[in-house]
Image (cartoon, rainbow, N blue to C red; front, side):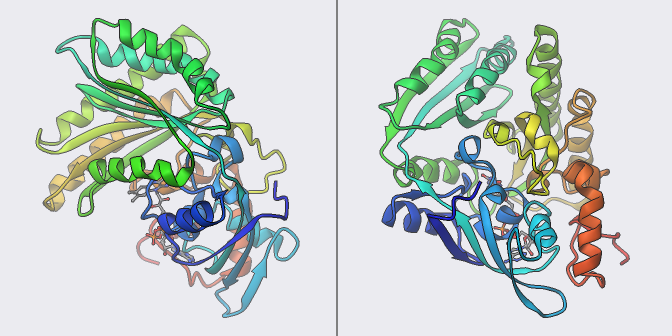
Amino acid sequence: MPQLTNIGTMGAGVIATDAYVFFNGQHKMDITGGYEESVGLTGGFGQGGGLGHFTTLYGLMVENAVEFKIVTADGQVRVINECVDPDLFWAMRGGGGRTFAVLTKYHVQLHPALPIHMYNLLAEFNAKGNGLREILTVHAENQLAWSQELVTGGVDYLVNGVEFDAVLPFTDDGSKLAALMAPFVEAVSNSTEITILMSNFTSYASYLDYTVFSKADAKATEPPGILQLLASRLMPQSLFTTTASIATLIDAVIYGITTARGLLPDTDITATQVVFEMPLSNPDTERKTSVNPAWRMTLWHVIHVAEWTAPLEAAAQNNITLGFLDMLAPLKASSPEGGAYVNEASYEEPEWEETFWGDNYGRLWEVKGRYDPEHVFDCWKCFGWRGENE
Ligand SMILES: Cc1cc2nc3c(=O)[nH]c(=O)nc-3n(C[C@H](O)[C@H](O)[C@H](O)COP(=O)(O)OP(=O)(O)OC[C@H]3O[C@@H](n4cnc5c(N)ncnc54)[C@H](O)[C@@H]3O)c2cc1C
């Protein structure tokens, strides 16, 4: 909920790293940015959702939006907020970039800077063992407790190992995160299926200090020049309640991890990211944003990722794309009330309107028709897209 003090202003094109240096480094304020520092905060990120380490605490970036300066399809410059053009403001808080207007200024709620605590695990699974299932299960069993205490983070699960980061922005010496992670650390340490390469707790005085770690990690895991394909699903809290439902969830995730590995040569990378930076503590009961309401029940954002370096033949790429879509089937079957994050979904998602925006779809259509009746703003599976021939 905007407090109308500590409002930050960014022009279009400001990338996350510059926002962290300016707001956190110079002004000791945190901004609801994302993990990857090259992402433009005001564009697709800040209009489609905006997920990062402060999401559990303060909500998505769109929930922290206070006012936009924009140019609409009729050429008019407008300043929009909850009082002026409220429907358009609502639509641009989740409807996605390049859809309703060109944004030139983004006013956003900032928050007093917090220390950042991190737990980082790097481990390998013993060959032909059960390590992947074991660690996914103990992760899922702990997830609700972590989310309730606003722990965020992301994990890269591979067929043969895992890189696990849990992050807590909090004013203490790191004791709270250590206590919350203790059952997980103990279970992993005692496992005969898992070989730990690194298991560390680190505290950073500020988010900017933490980016020294995240920068290095992003450079290693997502270097410039790679080609990447995603397929993802938002997995609801209801799946984390019983041993049976957790087993169904884990089966669905493992199916994706193993199927992906078979779709690309061993020299290319496949991994499944489990992101747990969820806006669970921000229920948005008044529906002030247009993101898929499925976000409010989500505990895991599961993203199957393929990465390769040399361009592929169209047929080979198509094969991977369709294979990745098929891989989502068990995740979709176990989450009929779920959806997908528009910014990190498969670009071939077939039922994309409902999957990306849920029941906000009707109101978004009405706003699109009112402010951009000629479809001046149009792009592949953006809101209002009418197909390749339009
Ligand atoms: C390496 C990497 C890491 C990522 N990490 C995260 C993450 O941690 N959290 C997260 O939520 N997402 C993440 N994403 C996804 C990210 O949110 C989307 O890729 C998003 O679309 C990026 O927005 P952009 O403006 O930087 O990109 P662009 O490709 O420049 O723009 C995306 C869309 O928005 C439109 N647009 C851009 N600027 C404007 C404007 N001023 N007005 C109107 N429309 C505009 C563009 O036309 C385009 O259609 C990541 C993506 C990558 C590639």
